[in-house]
Length: 274
Image 1 (cartoon, rainbow, N blue to C red):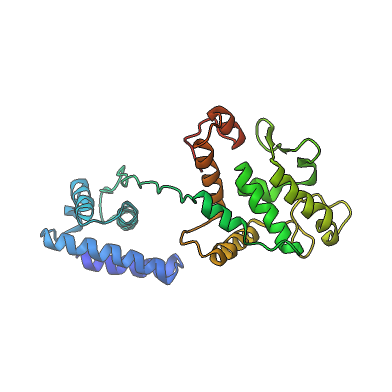
Image 2 (image 1 turned 135 degrees about the horizontal axis):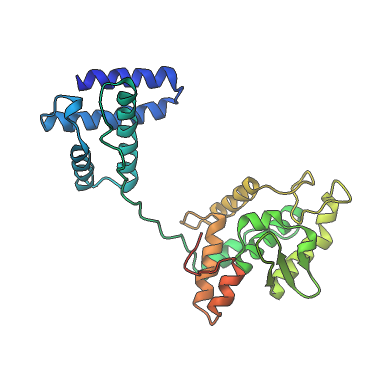
């Protein structure tokens, strides 16, 4: 009876929900494993499955070394199945109701050593538009710890090159970040020698442009950092957030004031690294 219900459910999901083959395969795999568990426990009727059965099954998966993500997905598949049965009136209550999946452990962010940061930042060539622009972006991201969305969203009026600071005004309170001489030098080279050559319209506000003279996108910057990561041959999964995390950790290792650092990166709590 259970197997028949599973077959009918999967057929329904395929016809009515227009799910991808991969999603359907995940449902099928999760529910097939659950059915095998029920068979091993001599549970022959859907109506015999209760909340204790589900909890015991989740504990069974945990003992087998399944990750929290896998267990959460399995619970979601089982819950969907029982919701289907409930809607058809084949069961009186959903045994997964109010059950929560185990909390997934947050992975520690990838951190670069200072030597690896130097290696990454040395990859762009500095004799053309792309290289000079990319160098300025990477250094600005690392040296200030701003978010990639802030980096991409920067306009020319966010910069004060004379006083050497960066203004982020898309938060509840304006955030002013000082820039060191290295960052200012790279930005000055990009702005004075290259940016103006690629501007499409006189009133273009974006600081960092692509070849077409438009604002560089977040996806475009991800490709850029992936390219230089591969070129540097650093055996780590480097993303734009990696430079932010590295900035934070390297700053924490110095004499930087914690409250000042929290203010710079836009957090009230320095332990919240996102």
